[in-house]
Length: 198
Image (cartoon, rainbow, N blue to C red):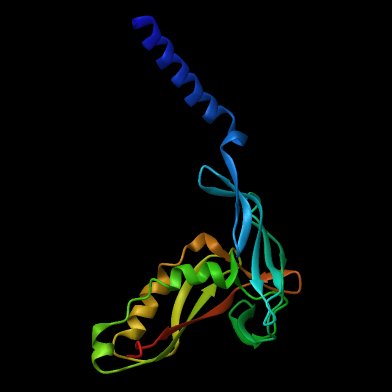
């Protein structure tokens, strides 16, 4: 009996160490309506595709991102909008960027974080509703900094929107590009405060 227990413990230890020594064995495919890629011990690895849907319901690739190299391989251009960007050191202007600052995973991934928005009790009591827009500066390395309110609602909603914007993961941003060069640019994050209809 003791021999059997020792053998079983040795076999379990061997399997545990082999699972660590063979990283490919821990990988699994994650394929959902909005994303597809490999997970290795819960971490995204390799090239991932992030999807969206056209008004007609067609599934399209919005982003293709290499999580190992931390590099954007493809993005589907959206609406042609002006972004506030630092075109030269200290010189901020509204320009059309070749690539706007992006959140890895697109609006669907960003929605996972913005769903954590709490509606302030004071705003609810006063029936305050509306959209707060927070401008987040994404620097040339893809780090979020400098949060400012572009549009306000009041009643604590502005403070809650700033709080939420500051909790977005800093490693999830891709800097904007003007030509071939990365530029610091603002990403405008809209956050809606709506009362439930009875």
